[in-house]
Image 1 (cartoon, helix red, strand yellow):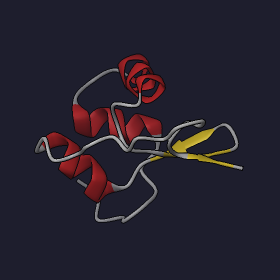
Image 2 (cartoon, rainbow, N blue to C red):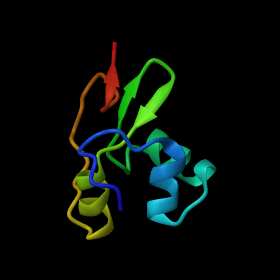
Image 3 (cartoon, rainbow, N blue to C red):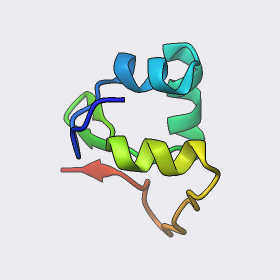
Length: 71
């Protein structure tokens, strides 16, 4: 897994998770996986993806908005 703290692309994160990009996109929309969205681009923290794989990621409760969206 890359050592980047932030900057895995959708394809790189999908590869690390061993799922298709479509599956990862569905997980994003369902709030199941940690991400940051800048414009139309999704970026993923390598450390957060590791936490997700270990089952340590707990989606934040975000009333009134989607987690991860950046204006």
